[in-house]
Length: 505
Ligand code: XMP
Image (tube, rainbow, N blue to C red; front, top):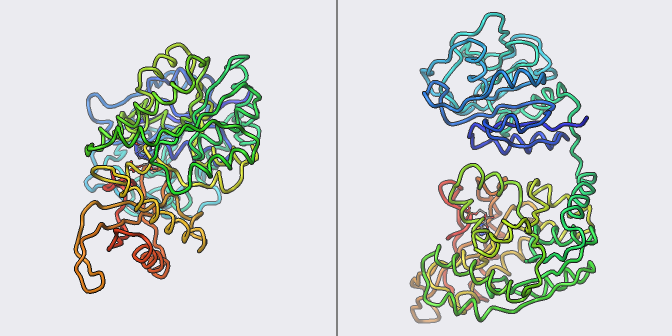
């Protein structure tokens, strides 16, 4: 029997990355809360993640240890997970004297399959202050750091723990260490996108049957892949594209052409005037989002009328995880559309399908390729549902949108031309709605500033700004200042996320 790898989430910011890394190694992994251990079915291995808490706290997250042992599969505790296992086996954990945070050195002490092929000394990434101060009898210390603190333990065959994070890139040989652990997994379910596609098609057909599906498309990666998957599944689908007036330059026409070229019919509804009217005079970012979300649903359901058996949504795995676990601001934002009553009703009636809800963005891209979508479509940068509204702080007006569209087209055009587009996770031009002084001819002028943002990221949770060449930035800046009316300043945003976010609003 094929089985997945269960990753138990103790709340670390890196837990999702463990799931991704395991999948990158070709094994199917799913995330579970500690209380869901029994829902894991017959996992082929279990990974206990790190977490921000201390196992010494009274109400610290716990695990049903007897059940975990009864599974009879290999278990790897990472950081918090290692400390928890050490206590479960009868050892002790103490608050560390120094906070073990950042790079450290792994020094392999004893032979084990976990460190097979790993250098005797290797850079690792730590982020916890507690340490395993007393080890249960019979525990093998597989590795220590330079201070002699154990950073890898084996309590008994099949139960191992590491004090560092193998999933982050700062742990130089983390991938190999994880792969070594996965070799112990019992009949792991293989994860290959081409075969996963067949599984998704079967699931869509089973969920939909002979009913009619409506699907909102935006031209973005997720909804394009969703529409292509529905098409390939040969279920009866209507694809609706709402032009909300907050799209980029030429985007509505491009989206239509893109779908036409792969034989998928879409119905476009031009509702831009309604959206701009609804946004007139509104400056609060959340109020803008609310209005856009509400109107979108209204326009969409006006168009499909009562003709909805089922609604397809392009929800991805990180959205599912985030809304199930953290309740973070980001998840509130992204699930915003879901909160609208009509969709909630359909959900309650079991009439919403979310065929991509087990996939990460990169996997959705790979799926898109196997469905025959072009690199241009699957390689598109993410674009937010509320569109240019989140790049236009303050009141949204047609002239501000025009500035953003023109500046963005120049920036993105240059990134494509100079081969940078595919190396950047997301890029755009936004407007800073402050008029500052400049000179035009002999006169002083007061005009807006444009901000350029280009980031690399893993699923938008964190982001770093891209070190674009000065020459490219200079060219973009010159062109914007010369070609876009109403702008006298161009800035490049060099903020990381956190503390900044990717969008400006
Ligand atoms: P932030 O700005 O939160 O963005 O760092 C993270 C990612 O989410 C996108 N984003 C949104 N997407 N509705 C969306 O559908 C929104 O309201 C929204 N706000 C941000 C953003 O483009 C980035 O990819």
